[in-house]
Length: 458
Ligand SMILES: C[S@@+](CC[C@H](N)C(=O)[O-])C[C@H]1O[C@@H](n2cnc3c(N)ncnc32)[C@H](O)[C@@H]1O
Image (tube, rainbow, N blue to C red; front, side, top):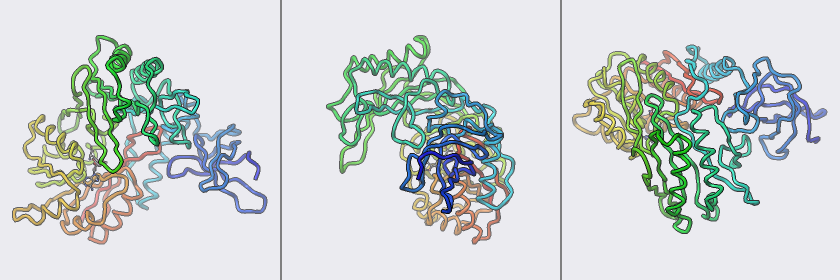
């Protein structure tokens, strides 16, 4: 098979890569996955993975551009694995996402809620430290279709400019620090990744340097001071910024442990969510989970809450730090949240207190197991409505079993994976539920990710 070919891009893979149909004489055409291409493009490409499936190719030239193609804003757009769709006009991105939701459910969806700010929206980024065999250093993001290889990011347009300033300052500090990037197979080197966070509503900033817990590679005082100085010089000496290191201790046969060291500035940030029901404020520590796009999270939560009818008791399952449940607490008598992560539960309880919310109760544990325990209690209160927001894999069989037993009037199902969401919804049809509404929300412009709300009623 010749390594170079010209072909049209026909559709996208589930990960948002273009698929070229490569003709091979009389044999059936072969599908080749090629990053940074879109349906309607006619391209010249080179095969980079010929034997295994899926076959992969590298874009060499756009022979005829798709009518949806635009000039990407980012200098790294042809390399970066972070956003695959920057070369697609924003309206076309939204149409692709809407179509994927409709296709997953075979049901009409509401128009997707777009982002007012398709750039600069991320409140958190993680940049990886890496070195090649020649000792060349990289601090940035993964190369598209070539993970875990990392390239040097100069500017990322998905976050505020100060993220790029800090990233470049930390890279310069690294070059003179004598430190090596962490190398997992040998447990050698120090630097793992740099996490930057920004509270979008308050402007507060945080930098967390994630380092190895192997004591042989611990940072010394001068190295820590150098890191702090690099971050402060990039954000401006007078600007408040929370600076941490996070020690990642991974020992064979033992659970991974993390320890934070607070080095400079306030020991947390405060973020706000402005919702139709008012304003909520949240304490964010280096490990706290928060939806990565604050302004779109507000729209997502508002849309989900608008679907809830009159409900005295609301369950918020997979509640994270309890943000959605706390928003629901303003109109429900009682909200019960369930979340697996002990850290998120600590944050959730603290955030409820911070906002003076007394009618939210948070339980730590697996949804299926905690529900079983609660249902066995004599004073158990049946929910009128249940909100679920599980991880990508969707609801597990035990959680579905309990939903089918509890039979709330409404289930508001939020998901970042319409495929597993559609499968679970199909299962709930067997318990008499009907799909009333589908509302996609664009939380991650320039990526293929979709957030979708499904309203089910009996
Ligand atoms: C998509 S996040 C939703 C977070 C939250 N609703 C929000 O908007 O911030 C999914 C959450 O489910 C939690 N989780 C994952 N598996 C779980 C399980 N089996 N039981 C309970 N919570 C789980 C994760 O820790 C995570 O916080």
